[in-house]
Length: 132
Image 1 (cartoon, rainbow, N blue to C red):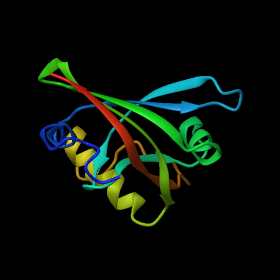
Image 2 (cartoon, rainbow, N blue to C red; image 1 turned 90 degrees about the vertical axis):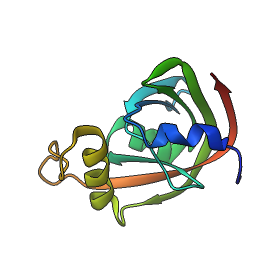
Image 3 (tube, one colour; image 1 turned 120 degrees about the horizontal axis):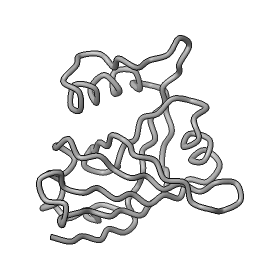
Image 4 (cartoon, helix red, strand yellow; image 1 turned 30 degrees about the vertical axis):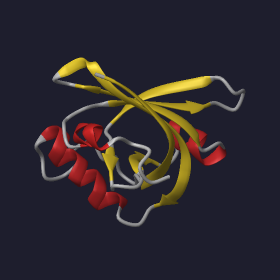
């Protein structure tokens, strides 16, 4: 849904702001993981490796909640609720390198494991809440 994320909070996606990503385990209980976060103007983007818990959870049940705190002011945050709109491997390697540049200042993601397959989850925001 276009316009769900207020323009005055999109700067959080440009900062080294970590997000807490809540997914649902098979029994319906929440699982929360800190993640690097991106935004393409329509979707919140999370990149992970196939087989990780968040990958399995998101492929089974695409409902998510995300909280992003401003690293410059922890009393300012953006909360997003939504669901996975697209899952793709296309461009995932380049994207994780882009995130490594943003968060680590490195051109290549340094923690890649042999045989690792990266996957991008594009999350469509349905609701947003803010503070600060």
